[in-house]
Length: 298
Image 1 (cartoon, rainbow, N blue to C red):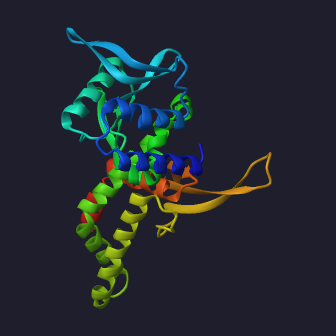
Image 2 (image 1 turned 60 degrees about the vertical axis):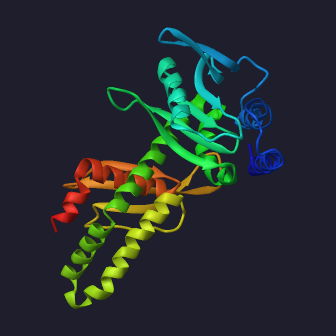
Image 3 (image 1 turned 90 degrees about the horizontal axis):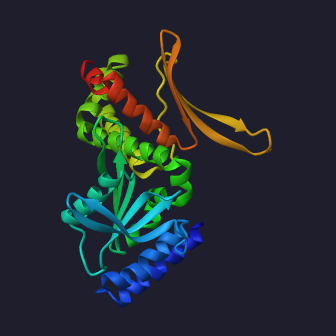
């Protein structure tokens, strides 16, 4: 799908909602949700989309509104509610119980005007279904990169999992930076004035806060704006390298982070999106190298 198709879907959906804000569930499914399934690359008129997918939970039988299948196995569940309703915790529990019961990795809960995407995390001994994003129809275009994770192409290739991991890393990094903003800004200020002159502390402190705010904004919004590059004896470096394909004369910019210890590279990460690289790096430093504790020790 391209941007014009996404825009057309949003405009058509918004028009239908404006004309019938009390649209019931059946009309919501037909007019708003089924066109979205098609936009995501699934064929409504093939076996890969099954309506009222049956399953047994406990001693009872229930049905998911839509199951998107690859090779007869469900990979996405969609639970629809009427446009005239509000998404509730009971609705969320309903969808996640379906996902858990069948081991489905992806879920979408929607009223056609509100959307919530769920992902089944399997990076622990006990898999858990978590909410990855919530947004309205008016915000859909800005959040298409998240909704697109449910597309046939990304689910089938497994790329949806890779992208979701980056989104979660970015969200975790943003949350940590927001919670520790004041502490981090103070530590940055202390580090700088130790190298120059403490008489400049009043001038440096606001800039330190701006640095943290800029990092939070860039990670939260996925901006391509330049991030401050951190260098410490060559141990942490971000650089744009030219990557040229053997079959093409065009070049793309790739951002690379290398972490070294005693001269040996212990970790590296690269991506065309600088904010994704920084998000993964910050998350790694927090989780594996106690970044917050290290800063507080200065």
